[in-house]
Length: 171
Ligand SMILES: [Fe+2]
Ligand SMILES: [Fe+2]
Image 1 (cartoon, rainbow, N blue to C red):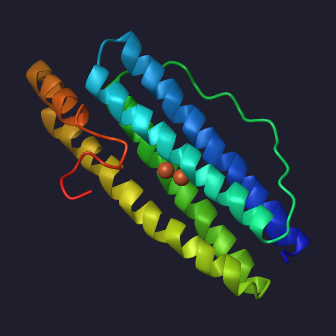
Image 2: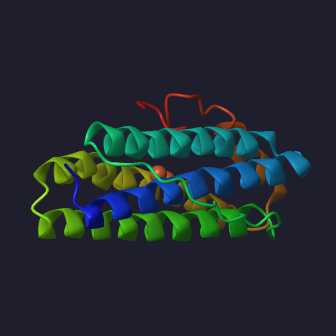
Image 3: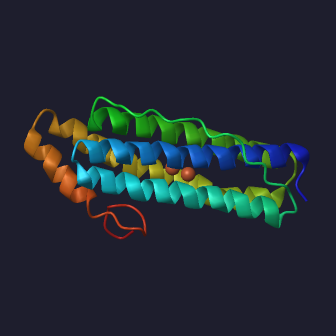
C-alpha cells in the first residue's frame, strides 16, 4: 500500500512523464516543419519512450493498490531557434527530470517504502542514459558550429534511431 504522500508524488511524476512526451512530440513537429526528418525521427522515439515511462508509473500505482489521478498536461512550446536551442532545452529538461526522480527517491526513503525505492532505481539509471545521449547530440551540434554540412550529417545519424532506444550502437 502506498502512503498518501507517495501516491501523490508518483501521480505527479506520471504527469511529468506525459509532459515530457508532449514536449518531445512538439519538438518532432517542429523538426518536421523545417524538414529535418532525422532530428524529427529521434524526437518521435524520444516521445514514445516518455509515454512508456508514464505507463510504468501508471501501472505501478495501480499495482500497489493506489489510485491514478490524471491531471491536466501543460502545453509545451511550439517554436524554437533551431536544433542547438532544442537540444539545449532538452538537456535542461532531462536534468530537471533527474532532479524530480531524485526527489521521489527521497520521499520513498522517508516513507520507508522499499518497493517504490526499488521501482525508482530503474529511472535513476535511465536518467543517466538520457542525459548522456542528449548531451552527446548537443556536443555534436556545438562542434559543428555554422557548418551546414554538419547539420545534415547529424540529421542522417539521428534518422537511424529505432523504437528500441538511442541512436548509438549497442542499444
Ligand atoms: Fe522519462
Ligand atoms: Fe527522458
